[in-house]
Length: 419
Image 1: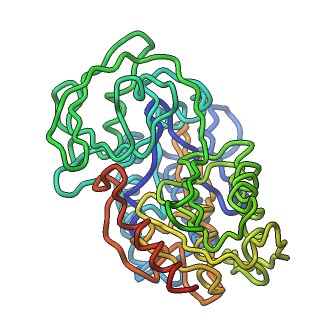
Image 2: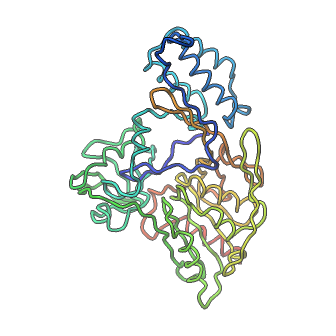
């Protein structure tokens, strides 16, 4: 499993999609300094913390039984290191090291400082430039602009979707910092940042952006494919309250005085935060068993009762996915693909569909443990493999030039073949 891709809003971190409620919440307090009750040495206290974490991993970690890991040896190795004597800082480093022993992203350590920042950040308004971005390490590490917020400083400065940010204030994007490079773009309203930008097919150029207070907004983008009876919907990086209303309104517009012969759902930059309308979209376009949510103890079959609105149950569908398609959008695409309701094209998705248990450490840091996942109707483990497109089209978001999108062109050809 490889989950190195993520979507970020320059100025705030987006909340990850959680399949089910967090379970197995554990909190370990500092040992009491009293004259009664048992006294523990530092090593005994740290051992208790480690064993409590290990119990959560044994009970909840979704891949405990399937991972190619010698759990007994791993446990004994870390326990021996703890008993040799560690400082509090060394203990946290040990836990962070443990997360690297397992498949990427399935166990995640978050420091106290990172937790406080995430818990206290206002995701609706922030100081920044107003751009949603992803990270790409090929060929040169760079930040990819997925979308810009209307009327934001980024838009006013000419920054566009598909642009690449190569340098921030003259300093290149470093591989080891990954998407955290956007920390260097953030700043208080009124301050400025110099960005080296490369648009697809063009040479590198410089822009200066004055930061401002920006409100986080998402917006569905719609289009009628020229000289066809096909509609196109580009889902935004973040959801918003009226997203489903806009989908239905688009269907109404597409079918006004004509028959819609095909629909393209573009999920390449869709990242689910809370409230993404997964159930409503499955109901609109699908019918029957969509897949299974499961954890170590039980599984729950997802069965939907389709509603035919403006022909939605019979409209031929093509779904475009990519490296930045995460969470509920992945589940939508996987479900409709498995029941052969839609043809999925693009590149494999990250498989970021798991729910989490949370283990809190004494200093306020925490460890996220993947504890639930989704399996499509055809048995594909989306959390492990992501979505495997029916038609592979290797085209990065940062390679698409204005009005020249090979994936849309391919989608049209697929729909034409269905007629």
